Length: 200
Image 1 (spheres, rainbow, N blue to C red):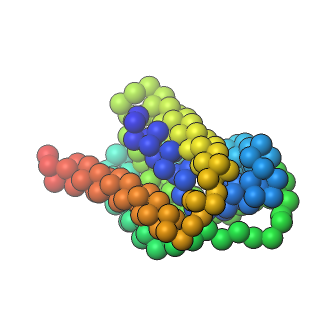
Image 2 (image 1 turned 135 degrees about the vertical axis):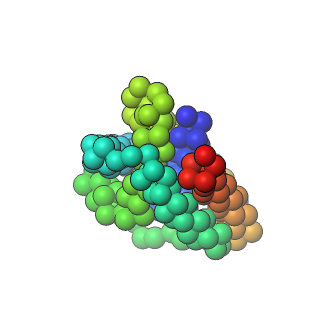
């Protein structure tokens, strides 16, 4: 369950369309207006997570299937980590209006997010569901709770320290730390699956 919360906390600080939109809104209109983006993105991503979870769990696949998916998920985490490792600056864009439908479109059109849920979070959620009644929904709730906390936290920090945090020196260090967390989770997923298949 701690893994779910940490995945959500780290997921909320990973650069992507929602975080970029949140930072943009902070720069354009301030922190409080950026909360609207976080709220609508939370609703859209929760729907995406539930669709992924219900679709895969309704197939009644054995745990070994999700352990194989965990290898793919670990690869995706490593791929995201290498992208994070290369980030050197935060780019700002022209003034843009982010309505609910535009935010939902950003979330649902994000292939990396779908892959993150299908290959990383859903297998772990289903594994928890096999151990704890309704554990898969608890897992999704904890991921989303962590995501909201960290996204709002990052928006607050960005608001307070945007000059310092967007400096060319701080950004690479910050994102290398985020990348390290993703690599840790990738290695944990690989280890768990290897033990499942070969440690019996």
